[in-house]
Image (cartoon, rainbow, N blue to C red):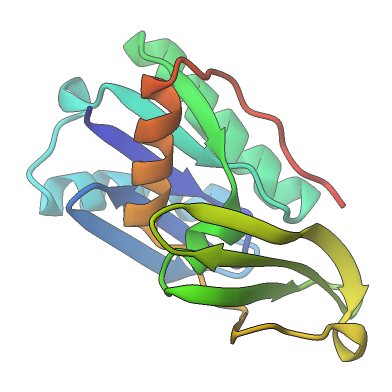
Length: 175
């Protein structure tokens, strides 16, 4: 299944397909750059929107405005193309860059972090669910990833798995 992933929950715009990904640090400029970056990404991948069979949207946790931009774009694309859309976990998309135990954290504007801990083996096991916590109180387990963008390929893979399992819809995670 050919799934396009997009994530705007972090300061990065992340785009992904199974074979390619792009992460562009935009800060708070996702809305102004998303469509241009998406068109360029698809052109670089020699992929047209007609080839996309599903959309995977990073559902956070993340900022309200950032999530809203990604969710709106994903829903709009899916509706316009007549294809399904599903939300995927942004922090899992980061954790999937690694093997074994990994703690993922993204800083927020108020000095806290969104953090979760997973074990990545053949599957994904959640050890500590996503939470908002002061960085100095976080006790990372295993590899520690701070403010790293999710993998666009991992998000596309998660989306493909979810869509094949019949899942649909997006539930934005605001902590």
